Length: 298
Ligand SMILES: [Fe+2]
Ligand SMILES: [Fe+2]
Image (cartoon, rainbow, N blue to C red):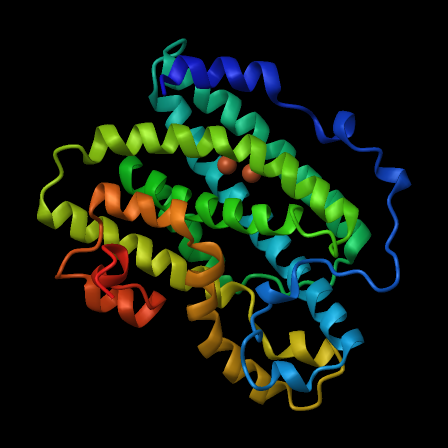
């Protein structure tokens, strides 16, 4: 899709969350989930079967808070980078116009996430100093094509997660509405990143694709570590929190691939051929995806 068309679509269709939601009418009801339990880090392990319903509901609240905080944080890093990109692009060019729109939307998303957390609870685990320093460094040193690659990884994961959340009627209405609105606007950002990456990686050789693939695999692994902490389980009245933490760390790699990097995200990997024989080991260790899985050989 042409960048000009994306800018026009954004101008016509994007909303302020204040227009879209009546924030004061939402409330939390007994018995509802805050994300589908199938997305929980501990789902699909023998330990999950030992949890009571209230514990599962509380875990969906606590994990969703951590994920929203993660989105808000990564979007602030994106804005940091996009501001840098905006200064470098020609004022009035197609790219400049879209990056300006994207930045406006991402700031509004962060404000929306903050409002959401004020309702769901602000008890998240803040990023470690190292993580903050590392993400800031990435926004400063990475060339544009690698940064847009990292950005699309997070956007694809948030899109898949958003789809699963808003189509699930067991989930709290506010969470579903926010997921739908966010997913709609993110679709344009994904289309822009895709156009940018097509241009940048069109004639990319083996080494550039291998390096790009390593960045993407590490980014996925990094995202995992952002939201799994032993205290998550303690908050859901689980006594053996360390054991749950260890099992969740193992299970999340598989469930991330199963739930969040589904068909459409895998299409990107296939299109750009980002998994090469030289980085397949890194993909396997950090994400469980192999070339064979991408090309359907098993
Ligand atoms: Fe966003
Ligand atoms: Fe975005």
